[in-house]
Length: 235
Image (tube, rainbow, N blue to C red; front, side, top):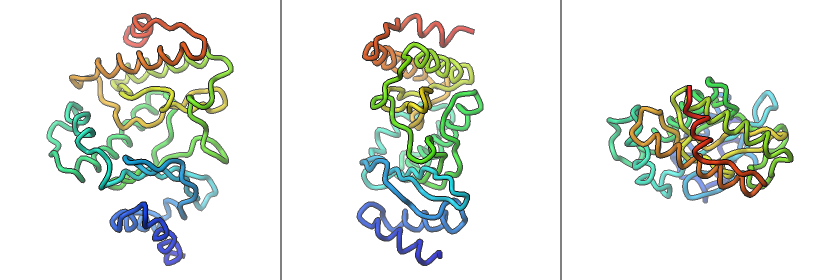
């Protein structure tokens, strides 16, 4: 079984380097998943796949690309995070920390009562997490506008408030990083998230608010940025 799995990883040789193949094989050998299935997205920063597990529940495997991702941009974000002030500006260390940061942010958001994918395992640049959606991954908000925009966006703002109260801001919130699961929002791609005591937290929050107010207009709502900010930040 292990030999077959390893050979299957090698079929992705045009996508993965040898180091990544070894890491995937090791994680699979330890029972975290069986094999990679369909690619959800292939990009310069990360490759995202669905994967089978022994219990039959599909998971998501997010693999940050070691050679092509913009680690300088990552460093520009993470260097302000109060949790990583002593991080060295080295490519692999930054990328590994970026993946770990997403894992920690998912846990923190989940503990605050925000619907996010359950993080399962993080090893170097590979993050395993719950797949949102039973058979197929749930669609992004940009592709599946809510039937009840007011209720949907109210939950989005409530999630933003819960995160802020827990000491966390998403940092890259938009219709591209929210899933629509049965008319309920699920926040994803939270690697840019930072703690509120970081010096750029307020700036990131304002950008998130601006993005969501902009999107709200597309679905027939008029959210005021200052009102939304008050809702999020008030005690």
